[in-house]
Image (spheres, rainbow, N blue to C red):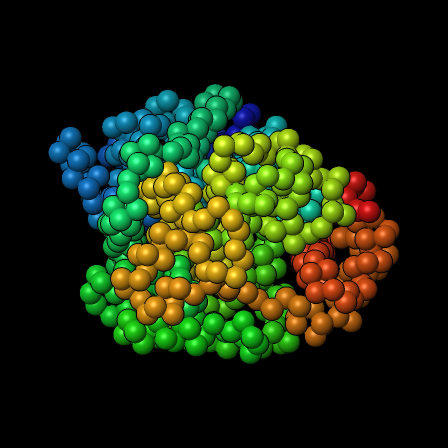
Length: 604
């Protein structure tokens, strides 16, 4: 796990090595163990790296890493979980390995298979590879989008980095940072900027998951190498056989995710998803270390996590956070919200938990993210059941939009683009349509951004076994009835993720296996109430640019407490997003420029 950055010039100019090094320094928290730079003035290319040492801690793992004659240079962020198998295959083909790192596997895989090497890699990764013989830069991102990779393609050249804040280190001739108006509309209306081609910084895009970009002699080509599709053979499995197959597939994923040359821990909430990961990890043998964070309110899950830890015999650590005292935590976390693709408040809790784990010597954490998206764990998957499945298309999407975002019809001007541009609901299988959207849009642009930024802020690598692409493909291919049984929606029964519950019943206490989803929540409402006066001073002022995203009626509603709880939740969600937006502007843009945010159509 590391941070990468680099530049490929399109026209002659000053050396780009110092610029790439400055970009890498801006994300030094991602790699506190080592730094490296490749700089070719002749080609106008530079690759910079910050290392968090996980596999092969020796100097042999230093990056950028080259092939034998130095014509291939690589900077890499992530983990290749099948690197040991690939090492054997490539060694048999005649390649000589000088390290025991998974990074060197990518170098030789490229020499063997070219840009199609990505199809041979199993893991989470974002990398940049320079081929001097072909004068070609290759950028690649893993299938699910677990690891981030941003790029800015401008007149000066192509710049790329693991985090958007690195682009603020570019010289002024690359342009003044501005807010992207379309991204602003998405951010306010949804919980994330779901368009891969956008971030809140105009011109800065995200390389889509499952894609490679090839840049050669000033021309770039974007190619998809993986797509989420149904496997008919899995779809035909009887339920009992499907549970056994899931057990084998997920167990192997957890086993491979535990491989490291540093201590590994598990982020344990006490819910079904992380508890299953902990249980499968405990089956591998050795002492399992688990960590949890809680708040003094009714959603505190620490008792459930403690129960799982006792059952599995893990070494367990707890952290208590008072939400009324979390203001300093928010200010510190704003630097982690650097692209504002997502303003998930869970970033605070995950960031705190990662810092605690690092204080206990843990550099790798396994987390349970992804299970809800692939197994249908959210309430809005119930829209595939009656009576919702029979709703007209526009009303069906309104239901999904509100369930996923907690934002009501005051944002209807931006709903239609979501229907038309994002995904159309196939009449035959609305469950799979929601799952496809969750995996391909929400996960890489929302929750995975939170996990990556929060853990890397503490110099900790987060691994997500549920998002091993083989587990994702298996779950996506299972019939809906294996994930959400029944024709009719039943809110009070814990029936979601049915196949995962069947697996959990073999390894966990019945109360955990049958427990309904709660969510590892940061108490946003309590935080906003505790700091209401300070928040209004920041958001509700004539100089506030956050409020330009709302119409006049919505501004009045924003600061009026609502008696009906769903409306109060909606108000809190919006107020939180605008607070984070305003603090983000003050942190990243105010000292550099005064960006003009055009009024939008969002509002009542």
